[in-house]
Length: 171
Image (cartoon, rainbow, N blue to C red; front, side):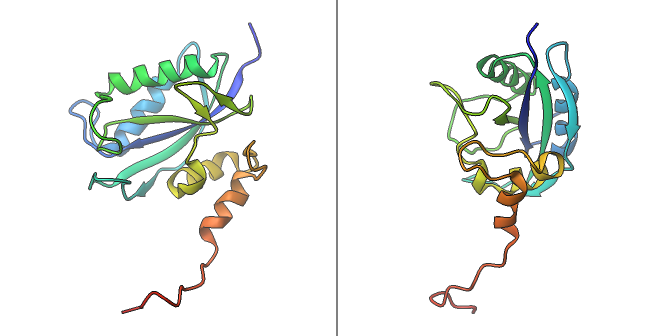
């Protein structure tokens, strides 16, 4: 058996599920579902709440998990999508709609990966504080292979005070 890869997984939910409950409970159950003979969950961030991107109006519960697995990225993506389906996720309709469970591969120890279905690092994670903030609590020194910045450095960009744009009125 080959040496396992490390993966940073983002988790999100903004719908109730009749079996699992509200979004936070869904994420806790999803962490349990990740743990298997092929995936070892060894760190889980605190949950944060965020406003949705796109048309959904429900607040999201978000978190991240560090996992180890010998699965290659595409095989892990298939496993994550199977877990999402087990939680009632469907992949039809408009992007950014409300969902019971969203599991995304953000980073992996292999660096950069790209095929027709998957890009690692995740294309938008650097702009998403609801991913970066929880990730920093469990993997602050993990470097983005594209920018070379650590998660802590990326998070600092969200927490710095931004100067006011003089064209925007405060009223």
